[in-house]
Length: 337
Image (cartoon, rainbow, N blue to C red; front, side):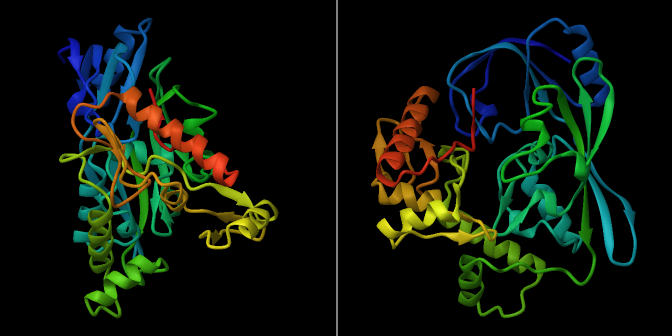
């Protein structure tokens, strides 16, 4: 393990922001991770996964530990289900494709989400009607303070909409090293409840889609709406879709009857943040090298040399404008560093 000083993180965050780490080391095994944590017990540490859900607004005055643990395997199976384990450093989309190549169902709607497997439980990532919590069994995590491994089961994780115990009660205390999912081997529960997927399948004359056909539809939709971070710096959806009490929403809806929404319970509705941002006139706007993507208002982008602060300023402008126009708070999904 080599520790690098004054290390550029431009290739380690999907926004492509130029920021420096005071020190940087990549770890490829749990033993390496334990060693680094012990050797630098008194140093400030910053844990880096795939760099897909963060906005760097400054240099990192700490030891950046890049989690690069690789490997995936079947750990148990029966007639109907299979339990698969992935190490934290595996690319999420490549892991999803591996499950589909084996005809394992459950993750297909989350195809092409950027990032690594280890960070998926932190955000409880989701797309097109599915979330990590739907297939999550457990994850193994290393406690930073004493290097002890602990297993967190589904009920331990307190999953919510883009929320988990790792963002709240035990934030910055653990490093996720591997994740176990329970997937279907037969009688797959195909979820095509979102109109975009239905339209994409219909376009290809598919009536009874396979897992791979659902995945291909999701990939096509995401590619049409979301820029490839390798070509245009971004971190996917920058904002969460706001969840409102029905009683509050009904008052707003009377003023804006064209407002889109989805009922998520008897008392709550979800409003698409992208719709709000587009109605506020931000879609496709550019401010120097920072801007809002032309095809998806939820995505903030770096056109080349934007700073993290410039992107953060745009996000705050959007939040303030949305609140003034609609009386709705929208929260950032991305972690601002």
